[in-house]
Length: 295
View 1 (cartoon, rainbow, N blue to C red):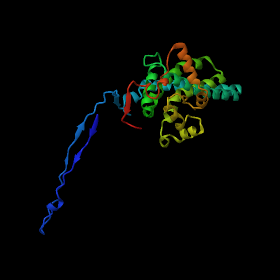
View 2: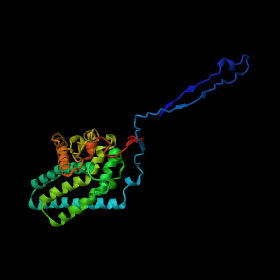
View 3: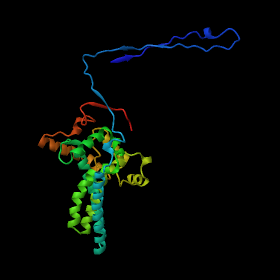
View 4: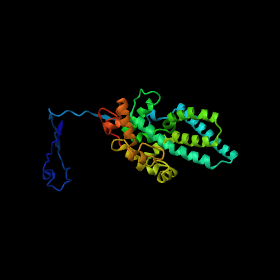
């Protein structure tokens, strides 16, 4: 449909409204007439593109708000992680071990980044809302790729509660079963990074001027995934830069085509195509989605 706008302006001669006498002059009169002509052209050989205008979630959307259930699970997850860290520290004092727990903690930090990448890749490319356990997270991933900035509007517990629940059920038995400071050096660091990686991810979408200075410093040092680094994940086919703790693994995984090779193996063995093969945006919707709210 083509709309042509034609405007007709009829101006009365200005001099006609100016009095010839020396009395108080009258007001100038300006008459404007507008008309709109609409012309419709139909292209029979061209398919009509389906456009859908979608409003992104608002900051007061209930799905972005924290509930008491969310806060409970985040508190529970933090408690189990703190208990593990405390066992590592007290055990290290008791056994005079310092280097081993520290190295184990560093290993947990490095592997947590790798784990975040594998999990992020899996939820971005496979499954749907009916997938057991992680279905809700897959749906969140779809929404995140439609409106990436929404993650910055999620309240703290709302953003962390899903992984906090998993950390609680995983770390609590380890707290009860082991006292080894080296084991807990690894467990506490790994679990902490997993629990808080959604927040690291949210910071990677934040505005630098609005982020805490310490967070910006850690991003600049490469200890947390940076904004400039993560933005590449939301370009092209979304098939890179999946790791969202420090991002240290991204270069290795992307340059080695690790995920592409893994996708090919799954396709040849199971016949399942990843969403990234469909190209940008099309994996999230069958329609062209236009957002009328820009971040």
